[in-house]
Length: 276
Image (cartoon, rainbow, N blue to C red; front, side, top):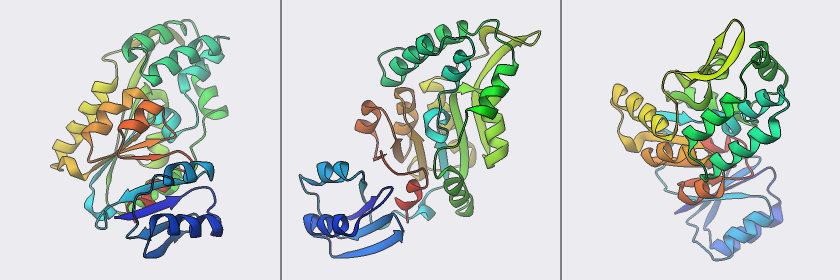
């Protein structure tokens, strides 16, 4: 197997020590902050060493080229972007602490997502629609490497899907901004310019995320093994498990435990390095 090591910065000494630790037979540079170690072996100290040096590592197959994949599906909040949109919307009501606690419990898997969404959205009742624009304009930022990731996927001819337990107000704008082929999310009910505290239509929860992945995959005739999915919360696990490769991006422990690969320190463009 080959070993991909990456992070904000790879010191020469760290690279030398990881090479010795794993008995790698060669080093291939994938960029200024990523390398592929050829014919590397697992070592009991590898995980703790990389964690101490803020490095991500992943054992990848030799033939794991991006050319083998056809579909990429990603979560939005805290994966593609740096915030949980509903927490920031709630901040406009002075309720961020209360709502964020519910969000955190749901992302850890301690609370049913549908229940958590219903409770959180109800607290937004009466908020002016303009609060959504303020969150998008003033607080929402793409996570590092997002644009590079989407550009790389597009260049490889991969179909891209943004699927979120968040809201269409944000996914639709990000779809246009980044060129996603599909975008699916919950729609907030708005009447007379104010949020009603309800969601219109079916809730996009973990099962709906998996269904979206499968629907797009089957529509294009792609095999399950050709799908890459990325997410950070417990509600992303169904779609990660339905993909050929599931990537936990700066994720909760339960997600890292079940994902194919975990990126805890790298930007989103680190996903491309796993298939370089």
